[in-house]
Length: 208
Image (cartoon, rainbow, N blue to C red; front, side, top):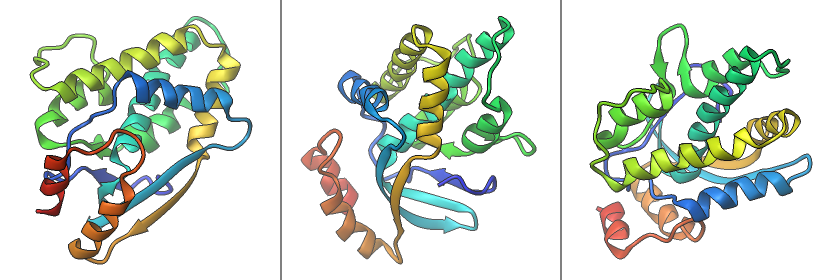
């Protein structure tokens, strides 16, 4: 998905906000623990917005979680590096490909509009001081996902952390870029049988 440093992803305004909770995050971690040399991340559905920018029509919960995963992993690995441990992974590369373009300071992944400024502070910039209120459930879930990852990473060996990083980076995926919104709607309706089930309201919203 991130084979080009110029490629960026956005969650369109009609999509639901981040909805994964402890159950889904812990399953994500468990899947990494159980994976040997290969990891299947799932199917993604995109709609072109403009050059090098894709709207995420399906798979946004997994993709958002991956960005939170990489951001938190960078924080933990940087601390270990500062403490004198030898890190095999190029941390700047991880930042450049998945978090933000280091030359243009452009975030590689934008979540829904109401949460994006919070997402920048919490995940993209990894600020320790937070001036923004947790005024949406999705903001609470973003922070909780970050905290769950961090708690797990702090008790995990460096060998396993680097293995998990490679598993996600080299994960097998399938993806499809739709031709128009009609096609996107049809595929979207049949694609949401994993993760957290959509409510009837969210399905109707997606159709509109």
